[in-house]
Length: 232
Image (cartoon, rainbow, N blue to C red; front, side):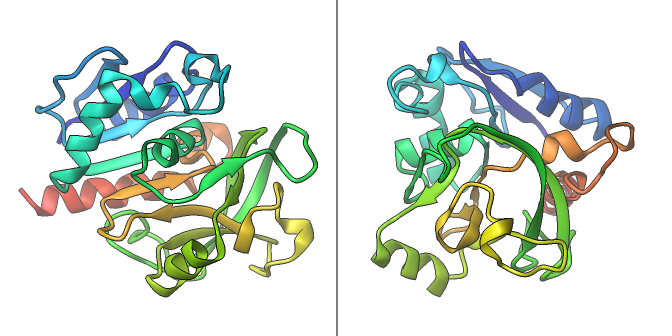
């Protein structure tokens, strides 16, 4: 299976993702420059964290017009897999692959920390390697990670079980103190209705190697790989 990782001017987590997919999982991985359009050879597109185009206008607002993201739209519409992490999540909402928006954190501060995240349900492929309601620990690093959507959109996300990750405390409880950025409904990650596009603010790629102190994020990549191998 072949992964593609988009590289924007300002990306800073692209190599981290490649270290997981190619270095740890042993899968072919191609770095996709933001001006590239040809991604037909790829099975999974990853939009990584960082500051695409400097985020000077608004996080992800410029990246949405890049040739690589336009190609990713077609990739998703074909039912192929798309994963957006942190800035990548912001880009996916800007381009309309996922609903809602990521706005300034509740306290208007950049937050860099390790937080507890509750897996809402075990679903193929993203969370199938976790248990439903399992509490994991993942790093976060963002200034605009507060998930916001209007009431109708939030209701639809909940009704269709599209919320896959929520911020919580170590016991899995949804307390205000455990919500690092004020996200509505403690939302940390959502998928689209079809389930082939996932966006999440926490960084699973930064918790995929025991040398980094945690492998909680590795299960997401392993679940994705397992699904792809079964489909061959």
